[in-house]
Length: 455
Image (cartoon, rainbow, N blue to C red; front, side, top):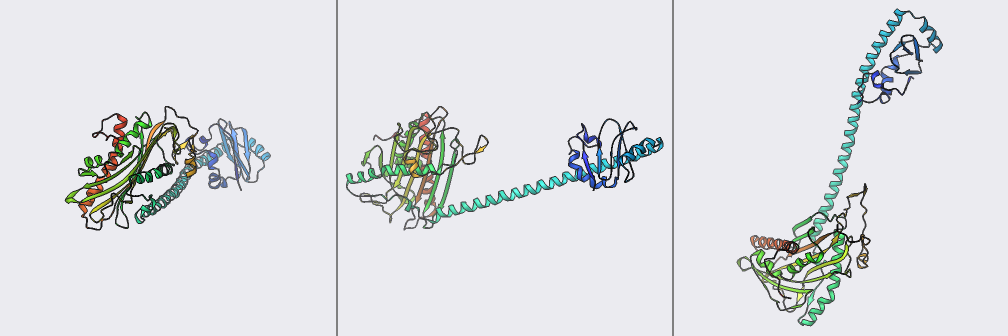
């Protein structure tokens, strides 16, 4: 076998006429050895036609570039000592003939080298294309798996009766007993909202808006809307400034429905307000053709400015505002008229707190490293432990509103035409968006169209 030793020379590519942007000799060693050097039995390199620079036999050929040099092809089996004596006795005519032969071989070597570069590039391109195709198939496979997971989640939302996940609220006829029932469940409702929204947003960035909206008809015929929002409020100075908008919306729900939907909405229990943190809304809305919609929900709200409240994961600072709305299952004073009215259930969780402006998501790199993720637990939230509990509030923190909403229009026992059902559903969405409008007005100092009722 013939091997080639490539010396460290200044301009090696000049030997084959290859540009500096192409592969160096060492990357072509095997190719050139197989195509050309297998026919070179012995090799001599000369300088100034006289000084012997290097020689090689059938097992080793050394190429070097040292100014002007000349190459000779020597018969196989000639030793180095014979080469030296032979080179000294060669006539000029034979020397010139060997030089011309060497030049011809060099031209052949250049041609084969160029062709080898093209083939090597072609092979490299084919390898890259193969790797890219494998990567593309892998990415496509991940996308298909993710799509399959999404379909499972979507069908889970549609096929199951999610009312079983909601707290069962039953109110009697005695006013004092009604108030004590709601007061007893208030803190648990607030804590559950903080934990749920912390987990729903745990792997997500907080400095950009996000909305996940799902509309579907459940297996039992209910028309549903499920929505999750992340709303950074960059102009808000503090949490209470934004939370006041939530309070205005929550305690004037009937006004928002009347103005936004364009239908008459009456609050049947207008006199029943126990305190500013618990409110019940028994609403009756009249829509097209005299169809009426029943709504009976309870709203719990709380604001802390001293850090005494629940601690949402990754939040900073001491301020926290929470609002929770749950529908009432049974009400002795204000029962549902399901045989005459369409029942509408409203559930929403709202948490407003401060978060670091630079808060990476699950797939956001930090200092070149993937962001670490973790899974929380109810106990961690209850004890105030969070991922960012060591962070100190600073000027770069921002106020963020997290909200999850589930609006359900129960299938009535009487016929309901599609136009009326669509009208009620569209009105539900507009009312749902009105909360963020109220928050924005509160933050920007814009006077709302309606003034809040006196509490």
